Image 1 (cartoon, rainbow over the protein chains, first blue to last red):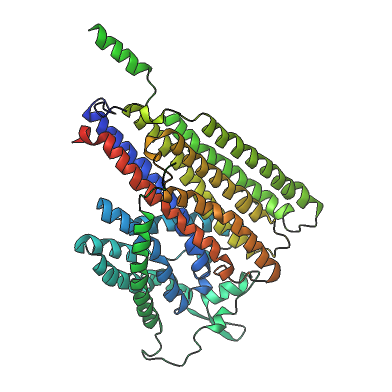
Image 2 (cartoon, rainbow over the protein chains, first blue to last red; image 1 turned 90 degrees about the vertical axis):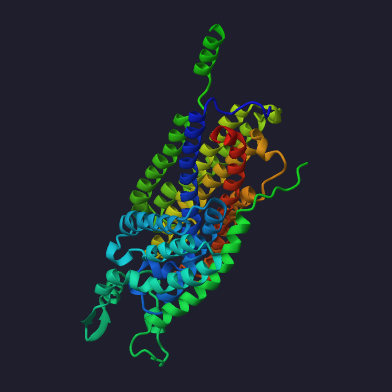
Length: 247
Length: 250
């Protein structure tokens, strides 16, 4: 290869090549990250995300942001710190949501006939936007971890509340009080019906009256900060360009 | 004038930098094939896939499994063998334009890998969750597993291996050794397939359908993380492309 030769014939062709490659790269990144993030998320947080009768005010609120902040932190570590692209977290979350929605519609509904309002995915976009905006405005990994990570945890419940509120309305069924989501669960029997609903909230502590969701959200936010730090460094490692020694 | 005319003729005869037909065809093959697979699941999952002791299960699902095993092994052998056999033995002396053309081809392979990863890791894996929450399993080879583990995973393994081999045999960038993150991005998702052994072992001994979030599944999670190795491949590619284009873009 001669260094004096050029790969392109003109500046216009160079620009066109560069733009075309941008689209090819974006397509590849989007779908590979979607695949990795989705398999991670469904197996570390999936049950709380699949079924509306699992979307409670304690473990759903706690587990999902902690497990959800992982890939956004790793992808930001490359897209922002190498290329100053400020939508790493949003890209991840949009990929995850696309994968989930396609699945819930074509498989949960289309193959096994659970109604979509029983199996819709959780909303993570508000937290992802906050992560990206904090990073864009501050340019600081520490601040993004602390402020963005806490925001990612805190915003999860309010971000989902408009969709979940109607399903948390109380109903009486055969003399028992339950939520509409629980009732849906009883009607759509699954192979292993969880004792989950009876397992949660056994503690007596009610510092904020009846509201346990804020406690869960704060705890989730604190852990999300730590997870962000750890996954930032995972992201840096995954972005490394080292080669094994050639033969 | 004559020289200019010759140059224009040569340009017209030259292969384009990006072969759009290959790119569209490559992705379309996965989409059309998996649309057919999904139709097959929809029809024969319910009618023939619920009792592994029934004769129709053997007809529609076990035979599907045997056929896909044969096709996967032969496809991997032919494709990987062709890529290796037709390798460029003078890869370090290609022109910059040819190198750029090969980078485009490489990105077509990576786009196909991304499509295969999407269907394997996202579409058919979560689909498996809803099937098992609906039907009690009595075999390792449930309809969802015949597609997920033994079709969609081998397909992305074959595609990832082909992308890696293309880069290794045709691009100067990858001649200095083996890219660690490229290996992570292709070998890691490959390791999900052997991890199926652990999964089936666990499901043989415990009834655990009530939790998709189960420690038995964490091997899949660990190897799923390795998809992030694509970030390292991205960085290597951007550096290589910047060297090829930088002075023309300046």
